[in-house]
Image: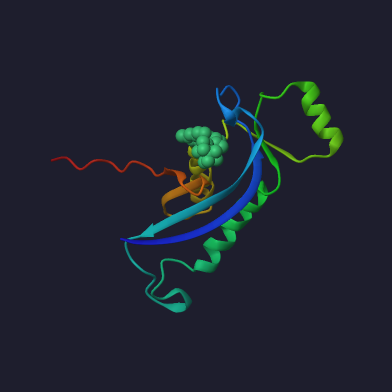
Length: 146
Ligand SMILES: Nc1nc2c(c(=O)[nH]1)N=C([C@H](O)[C@H](O)COP(=O)(O)OP(=O)(O)OP(=O)(O)O)CN2
């Protein structure tokens, strides 16, 4: 199997609602997103001969997804008081609401699914919150009998 890896990053703030510890506070990360796409065979001819797909295409698509979250506050839906939301709005701060707790795990799945929707055959997506910690999402392949 062939695997292509490409990586993008974005800087944003988040907090973990309901978490007991420092991560309940608003804080920022440089999130690194590493996408891995796979194929059993290579393109046989033309511009893409000998490639899984063009690095340029997957790079552009991942960059678009990462740029969307850049320099924003990422918040789980339903976790801020209306007055806080209003205050952020008045300040003109950019908030991106997500329907999941913004953990590395959930983001790895989120980016995996968005890239899959774009037609890529996905192997895995890794999301680094810090240089040392990352979560990886991949789909469990059906186990072979025997
Ligand atoms: N399994 C997960 N655990 C934690 C996540 C997560 O997404 N998945 N997230 C957090 C926090 O967001 C936190 O910012 C990261 O935690 P931590 O590794 O403690 O951060 P630092 O590396 O900056 O820790 P220092 O000890 O201050 O260097 C928590 N857990």
